[in-house]
Image 1 (cartoon, rainbow, N blue to C red):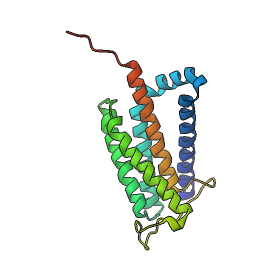
Image 2: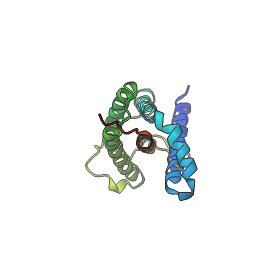
Image 3: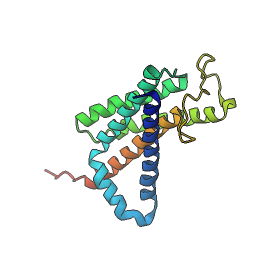
Image 4: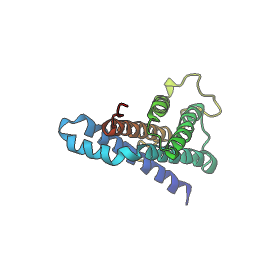
Length: 186
């Protein structure tokens, strides 16, 4: 596969993540969507940790390809996002393999930090004057290595992954709460 094909694929995955987040958030916000909300919780809830792991794993593999295969040099903000995403991939992998559903307590704050860093990075890309002393001159944070569909840059892809992980963990927690069976007293 060519570099352009892989970047296009990653951009399409980011668009899928964005649409999924919008739909799931709408289902939980719009009052008349209660039957759909119940369906989303029932279908995604039991596999939420595994799905979040899949998102983190694909995001990690994509970022590795972009730097090692496509030779896009990561800036400091990219490295900070990688630290969050790679940690998420590891934490979520262990949780999925051990069938732990309580991982949101650990993973959600890490994904939230990733969202904040990605948001700042997207702002720096669009408004270069916002760049502070975070990045160095050899690899500035304002470089846009790829841009698909008018919006999909590397920080936008990371942002999409972090948000999808957060939404998935939220659905998993809702499933956990609705399916929890109280312990019998002895």
